Length: 200
Image (cartoon, rainbow, N blue to C red; front, top):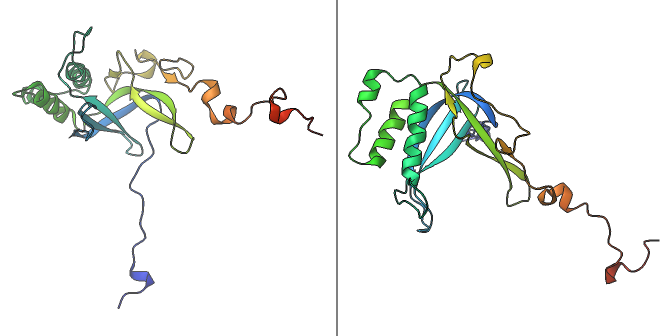
């Protein structure tokens, strides 16, 4: 017979998201994803953690190798460049670098990300506000282009990474009129037929 005391209470395993800004991080892992909607691009979902292990973030590295009209690089080329930028700053050994190879660019991306697993470096994360399904303001985390990675031991006062919450490229806020507190606080318009009578 089982009793109330025998049941284990469920605990969330989700950690808070890394805040926009510059953080010391490691890559925890990556997984190739192919959306069911064929119009959407496949991607490698890369999981980051701050080095304290208290916050995490996931960022999509797109893997479509088709070059769009007007572009010189494919999404996969850009993802490879981003992974190489990280690898350059997470202190790969010569042995690590020798293991980075692949029969295709996609395999090369996977191999490069594998070489970076668990190796600390600094990364700039940008933020972009959006409304969730309930109308609440949430923040999506993105890579801070163009230079977003740096060796972990570079002192803060010598860092080339810059982040400003007031810079629209570092933190993109919702337009004022799209924010929920702005949407619901319009002044009463007495020119409309339903508001022709005075409110007293």
